[in-house]
Image (cartoon, rainbow, N blue to C red):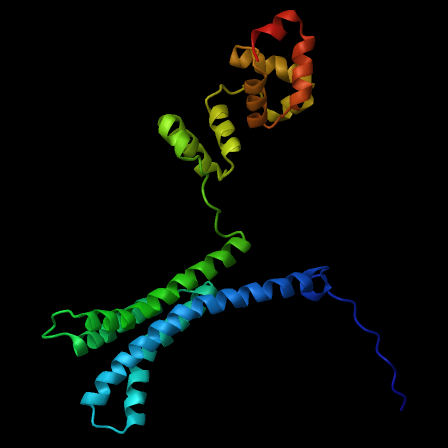
Length: 274
């Protein structure tokens, strides 16, 4: 029986390999992600090694087992919180609930930290070794959770599920104009604006009167008619304020066109307002 060749199926549009530049961007991003993972793992590994040797030193002196058993006990004590923190990390990156796993990791780490503290404390009075080894045992899941939150937030921001940072107005504006800065922040945080210039314009537009005409009607008017209506609404021949009112109403006019129209209105219009 003859074997006929099967033509290759066309690439799907949703296949990442069929999207131009996808493999290149992924390959370029992978070294950066690996470098971040190694940098995050370094402090966690060091902290757990110090805690492990603190447990092992105590067990060598107080647990009459062969040294492999002593090592096994020390590793087991310090690995439970790490195991719980790892699964909390995986759950959080999968956008799943990680609270119970995180609390379990914190609780177990605190218990093991108290044990490591007691090994070197004098009747529970702190010494340098007691504080150091106890802190190392307790800190591991907390360090891991910092990395988990960073990775999870980056993934959520990439999917558009987390908003970027709020607008930053700077210390100078807050020092000289605290009330106006608070008003700008109030409007910008609700609208999701994080550009300082856009946030200030948004707050200024909110203080202007509204045009009592539907946006669909405004869109059918000429630019000159819109500007004349906006000038009458705000009570002055101010192009910036008129443009802000029209933009807020959904009928924007180009700035250069607006200044040309105002100049064409006559000498009185050209000298009254900026």
